[in-house]
Image (cartoon, rainbow, N blue to C red; front, side):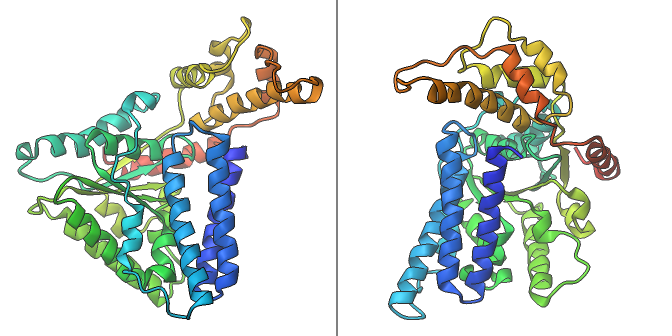
Length: 375
């Protein structure tokens, strides 16, 4: 697991723990867990200042900080000091300026780009050409680290949409109110905002919210039913509002059939092929100082099965390897310059890494795609 992936995993783990503690009324422990989630998110941003998802992570960190302040106030003042409107929480999540991600920044994925443009971009530009309506539910599925979140951000940028990134934890959390009411508030907010511009609700790991459950408690059943109701509302062909739900999942087979049907476009986001891997290496090595013997073509061939995120991690690891030599070997490390990165450096890193996507995983994605595809 790469440094970024590990920090993302930690942030998610602490956020989920914080929500659980918050729900149980254990405010002091919840504050501690929320703070750890914030620290992990901010560390990702510090370590990777050019990381495409930083804006979303900063937004989440800010939401957690506000909850920390609310909990601290309740501890020092009274048990019921949090009197702010519930839907203000969701309003805090809105990115009113679309994420600055362009199609050109997403290497490959031409089929996915075309399907998203057909479903969202073209109807948004010329709704008069679509008397039968157009898809409002878009499901992006595939292995982790292959560009699902970037695709959602790019389409939001293309149509100048307000972008609302949410996850199951924020919807199920007690501090946002009863879960099914949270779903209703979220969609009501989106419909209200869509009167002035398109709105994209982006739900990451949507399987954790609407996946198949062997056992369900009443609250989960009500959330799922409310979500179905809200999805049916935005799918109404007579509804002129431009509200889109883009769900992303690494586990499409966990989704319940009624929810699969609501996502009229189901788009497979596969790992990069050879050409895409080569372009990804070019993208991430562009700011690095490379030796003449570095063969990006060979690196692209050696990394079959690697995701775009894996390739970024490889380039980052090589950078760390070379830079660490300055701190370990140079007395005047504040002014010393790193040596050029060689092909040997890349090979040494590759010897220590395996792709995050297995052949078995890919076979499972292909099987599900062939059964449920809707491009």
